[in-house]
Image (cartoon, rainbow, N blue to C red; front, side, top):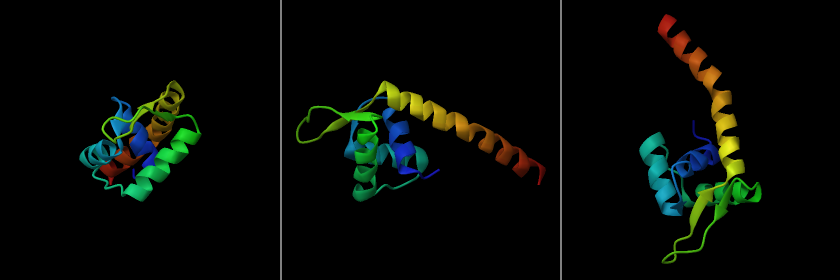
Length: 95
């Protein structure tokens, strides 16, 4: 899965992070290198939808936090992916 919004939400699910920390976390857990344009485009869209919020800057770094609405959205997205993963995994085993 390489959807930047889903990756950002997943990264923020375990705590607040600034942009660079999100990029390195996503790279670590998903093997996806989000460029700054892709990352901050996703952040802007997620903020506009109320899924994340920017916190006060710390040493020129602005951390972001997953909102309750963002947590609900992430849970729904992951639940929607579950049947696809289950079927794909089953079909790989039988082929």
